[in-house]
Amino acid sequence: MKITLADLEHIAKALSIKVSYEDLKSSKGGSCRVMEASRIIINKHLQNADKINLLAKELGKFDLGGLDLPDNLRKKIARETEE
Image (tube, rainbow, N blue to C red):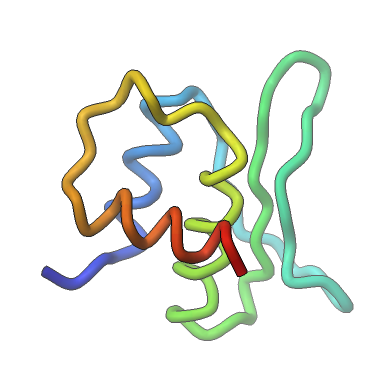
């Protein structure tokens, strides 16, 4: 099963993490906290595969234990977090 941005965005939503795509000149993006809210900001100019990899990597920084995730999503997040 192919992993899509929407798959990963649903995980972020379940964790109450806002994902946005911004015009970042010199950065791919990453995760941060604004006030008490967690955010993941991704450079909108990245290729789709790079957006997926970055979002998976950033989601790996959060506690996914309470979520019922398909194995392929859990493995993708783990793989990107290890790199």
